[in-house]
Length: 159
Ligand code: ZN
Image 1 (cartoon, protein in one colour):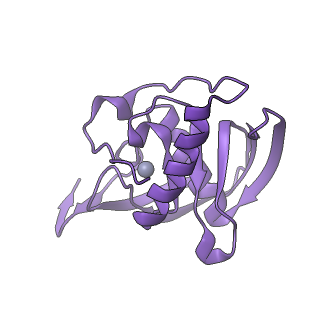
Image 2 (cartoon, rainbow, N blue to C red):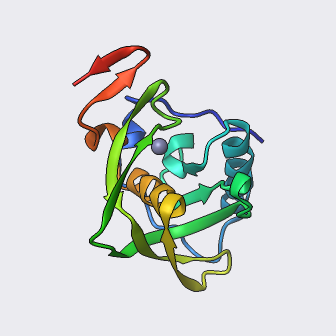
């Protein structure tokens, strides 16, 4: 099922999301499936639960075009960052039409839980590291407009 996206300045986008509890409730499992459908249908590369109105620490990553299977991270925490940073243009499904350059650490180590609650840790770099950071920001109420110095909205440059 495709969920409605919350659009900035919706209040929920600025809130700290809550830890997902285990065992996973059936409605949380359904939320994950619906977030998969929603991120695909919106042609997004990532989606966080607050963006669909659920204040839960849950994100999904859609890099299928790079042959990475669609996956969810539950209660993700970025536990290590590289000193080396990179800058890339980002947009956000919750802030339509806004794009800007965002500087982020190039590599990260993320800890999260799987569907059974098992703790998993992984390293990520490049676009994958960037999407995980963008979506993890969402569950902490942080948006790209907090990080970009100049951005375009439509054709207008906003500083
Ligand atoms: Zn976003």
